[in-house]
Length: 198
Length: 197
Image (tube, rainbow over all chains, first blue to last red; front, top):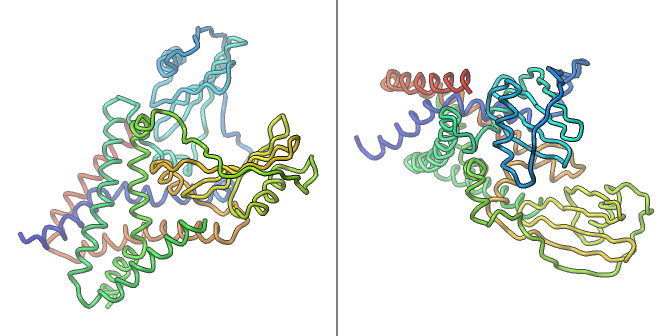
């Protein structure tokens, strides 16, 4: 196998392996770019969040405590599973946002009135796509969630490999060099213009 | 002929959009390792560095919406462009001009009659994340709409690369079996994630 052959096959097989991610990142960028259009599709009077339960609850949340650990305990008490993040918007509330690709639940603990509320989000395809797009990070040590984040890194490396191998393959076709330079230079100039003027 | 058009479009589009691909790839990696990069900078948010401070009295009424005051202040300091503005309880109007490289903060204290311009200390991870997140047609500026259009064009290009890549693979008979194995492997892994996390 020659180097040229290796580069071509790398470009192709890497793309085929990562095809689902490539498609999802492309398609899911649409609702990010046009949120109002997608919101109008679901503007049907059905509330975004539906109450699952509201019940008395009491748990100490000391200042400087590990919020993630407390969030995990609250999830256990609420009987909710999934990847999660814990936030404290103010002194009176603690929010745990639990999500999978298909569903999302927010659990709100109101410290002042000692109440726990859980609400489920209605399923929306735009949220499904943006949820996949935004998923990443290594805070969640659950093996498969961790694995997803590793694949996100692989996809990023894949993009860089496509740039490098794509430029190499372009250079191997001398008849396309002039137009290629124009495309490459034009894109770089436009991008630089945006950087300087936005 | 059709095949050649698909191949050339795939290639020239990729060459033109190379900077976008590069920024989206590197910024995604940075966001995927946000905690790591935060620790590099000691965990603190980037500092605002004062550039100028001068006396100023806004022409906008005291009860004008902060967005309107923000537009006046940005014109005054020659920084027209995408921004957000807010007024705190003490009446201080803070405007953040969303420059991708160097965001600026303009603070107007009507009680003291001062106008302060600050710039955000440059950090590569923050710059990349700003570029990644910049999108949409919500700002009343033609240049912002042009950038948003370039983002839309990039999305269309990604979907085109997806379809044209499949087409070009299928045209190369010798790679069909191995290619199908890689595609099936990727699809299986994706399905595993889709139904388990």
